[in-house]
Length: 241
Image (cartoon, rainbow, N blue to C red; front, side, top):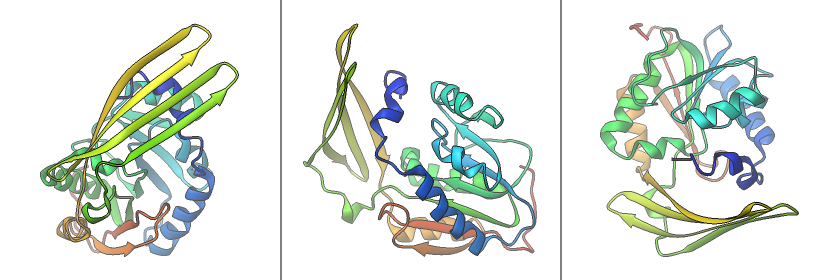
C-alpha cells in the first residue's frame, strides 16, 4: 500500500509525538502486565518510530506487512528483529509479555472475521499474565463522511500536499488520498486508497473477551481514539505460537 509514499511517510506524520505516546502506553503496560518477562512485539510497526522509544523499556521485535516500511524500521533500529508478516495469521514460534498494535492499524483487517483472527493470533503469542494493547480506528458513530482533510509539507527541496475526502462503504471507511509531491527532480501525482473497518466498542471488547482476555477500555487513549487493554490470565492454557 505504501510503496510510493514510504520514503515520505515519516515526513507526512512528523506531527506525531512518538516519545510521548510510548511514555503513555508504557505506563498502561506496567499497570496491567502480570508476567515477569520483558519481551514486546509491536504489530504493524511501520517505520519503527514507536519501537525507537519502546526499546528503551522492553526487548522489542516488530512485524509489518510492508517490506519497504521494514527497511526503514531496520535502519532506524538495527539491533531489533523485524518480521514481514500479516497481523491476521503470523507465527513467530515464541511468545511475548506485551503486544502492541498502535496508530489504528487494526482497522486494516477490514472485516469482523479478520479482527477475530488477528486478536486470536496475538493472544496466542502472549504469555500468561501478558498484556495486549490495541489502539482502534475511529468508531462508526465518530466517523464523518464527506469531510475534507489535508496535510502539507513545505521544505526547501520537498513540497507535499495530501488531500482526501472521507467516504464510507458499509462499515468500511474509504480514504482516497491524493498526493502531489514536488522535488527538484520533478512533480508527480498519485492516489493511495486506504480502507479501514470501523468496529463498535462492543465488538472490540467482545472479540478480546472471547479470545480469553480480561479487558479494559481506556476512553482517552493516545489520541482520543481510546485504547483496548487485554490481559491474559495467569492460569491461561498455552498453545503453540
